Structures are given as C-alpha cells and as structure tokens.
Image (cartoon, rainbow, N blue to C red; front, side):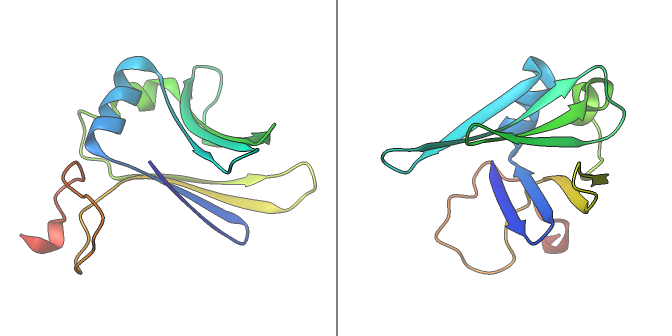
Length: 121
C-alpha cells in the first residue's frame, strides 16, 4: 500500500494482493516505524458510509470505503474510487483510492504484485 499526500489530497494505491485482502477481510493495515513513533495507515470497509471517508488520529490515517463496494472491488474492473470530503474545519479534502499499476518507466521498486499497466498492452 502506498500513500501520496499533496496539499489537501490523499491518494492510496493498492496492489492486487492488498485489494483481494481488503475485499475478503474488510481491512488492510501497514505501518512505518520512525524510531520513537510508529505511523499507521490502512483501509477498512464500513457498512454505515456511502462515500470514501478518512480520519487521522493517534498517528494513524484510516481510509474508510463503503463495504458493498469494497467487497466487490477485487472481482470488478473498476480502477479508482474518489470523493471530496468536507472537513470539520470547512476545507475540501480530496480522497483517491486506486489499484496500483506497474510503472511505465524503469524503477527499482518491486512491482511484481501490481496490476498490469493497460498502456503497456
């Protein structure tokens, strides 16, 4: 799972295995250890929401996805889900959740579990 944050937008990219695990188990989580602080992040399916929603609490970012959509995501061809969320402070926060494709350029990153890039076919 990758996260890209720029300004008021947050993008999560999931590999094939991660999308399958999310669809089957209803959640995926990972973390980065900064020594004295551990940063946690994840995606969870939730039956009580209709759009993507995100929270940041106790050094954790959790992206919530509607359960019915998430359970079907692995078996369909939909690549991206997005939503612009209004925060408690009144600003717009753009959320993007997408399947991770292999890169078009050379990279040292392991991409063996990424989705095949349609631009390479």
